[in-house]
Each structure stands twice: as structure tokens, then as C-alpha cells.
Amino acid sequence: PAISGLSLEVKDLRKSFGGVVALGGVDLSVAPGTCAAIVGPNGSGKTTLLNVVGAYYRRDAGAVLLGGRETKGLSPQQIAGEGLGRTFQTPRLLGELTVLDNVLLGAFRRERASLPGTMLRLPGAMAEAERLRAEAMELLAFVGVADRADDLASETPHGHQRLVEIARALMGGARLIMLDEPAAGLSMTELDRLEQLIRRILALGATVVIVEHHLDLVASIASHVTVLDRGVVLASGAPQAVFADAAVMAAYMGE
Ligand code: ADP
Image (cartoon, rainbow, N blue to C red; front, side, top):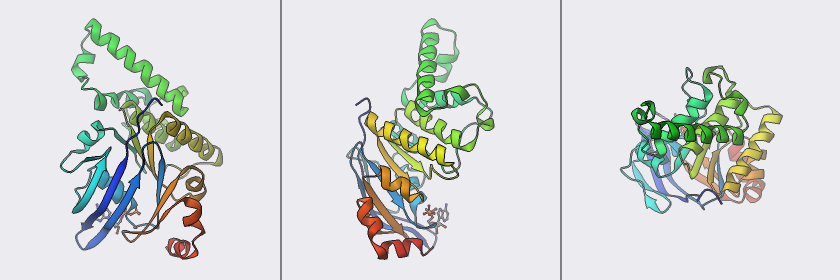
């Protein structure tokens, strides 16, 4: 495979906001190159889990290992450098830049490519800039939005912006990609394309962690699902087994 997927190991992870326990001791284990899903009602701690894994929030206690290495004390940038990429519920692109430039920004995360270096009109730097542009275009084609390369990010539909975020993460050398509700608001056709794209990302060898309410999508692409409820793991296992459990589904639908 083209990408060597990262494993993710989360052990007894805890995070509170004031008196609110968002994560009350969560365990999760994701094998390299597999797709794990995190589901659960609103407020169950799914996004907090992604934010703590990405070091956007500091954990209160517990372990987070990426590719077997403890990430404690690393900054979000350092963790991205280790190969963690993500997309957001509300896409976070620089709206006044083109789609292509947003993908190119991912490269500065990967190589210590200096922005001034590529700006300067040195022959080597120009060749490097061309190489990066070609790679960004390839990734836009991979996610299916190459025709939008020159559009302003702010002028592309939400569904496309999420795909651009995936391209940006891959440009940044992501070996594990966390997708936060990628199916939200997509049409049936777009949903189908997203599913195919996730399969192709897995085929490249990358690991995928998906937070998703769309249980049909989860059942079809995830090999493992973890159900969170009020910050704790209510159930985990193969989607077919977990979704067949009436007690789990009652709690899940109880929102
Ligand atoms: P989910 O993603 O499953 O909807 P969240 O992780 O967003 O759940 O939220 C879990 C709990 O943590 C909720 O009670 C939420 O209000 C709280 N929470 C999340 N982020 C913050 C924050 N930055 N400040 C205070 N409380 C937060």
C-alpha cells in the first residue's frame, strides 16, 4: 500500500469541562489500515474524543498512542507531523484562498517546506512548488473535486469543502484520518461517493476513524464500532453485532 496506516490506542481517557464529564474513561483500539466508527447521541463525547486525540484539548488523564507512541505533551502541529489528519463538522478552509491553495497548505505540515523558500524565485524552489502543485491536483482528483481547483474555497458547497479537507489531510502526509460527521447534509449521490472515497483511502493503507450518525454508512465501511453514551463506552465490536443489540440501540435512540 501507498500509505503506512497508523494504529490508535486510547486507554482510560478522561476529560471534564468544569463539572461536565465529557469523557469518563474511554478505551479504543484501532488497527492500522482499518476503519473504526464512533457513534452515540449528541453530547456523548465523540467530538471531545477527536479533540483530545488531536491535542486540541489537553486530557485530564489516560493514554493516547499513535503508531504505538504516547502523544502526551505533543502540540496539535507535532501530532499532525506524526501523521494524524482530520476533517471538521464545519469545514475549516481558508475561504479567500482557492481550493488548490488550501490543499497546498497541507504540505507545510508535512515537510518542513519553508513558505519563504517556495515564494522566493529560486530555481530549486520553483521546481519544488511545481511538484507540490501537481501532487495537490492529483489529490483533488482522488477526492473527486479537481474541477473546483481554482474556485474560492468559500464559494464551493459544504459537501465539496469536506472532500477538500480530506485532500489537504492527505497532502499533509496523514496516515490516520479522523472524519467528524462527514455524511452530514450530503445527498444520496454524495453519500455514495463519500463511501467509495473512504474505501479508496483504506485501500491506500491509511487508517480511518469516523464519527458518524449515519448508521448505514457505518455498518458498511467500519470494521469496528464504539458506542459512546455520556462519556463512557456503552458497547463496542463489529457493527452487525453492536447494532443488533436492542439495549444499545434503545440507549442510542434515547436522545
Ligand atoms: P458529541 O460530539 O458526542 O455531540 P461533545 O464531545 O461535543 O459530544 O460534548 C460532550 C460534552 O462535553 C457535552 O456535555 C458538551 O456540552 C461538553 N463540551 C464539549 N466541548 C466543550 C467545551 N469546549 N467547553 C465546555 N463543555 C464542552
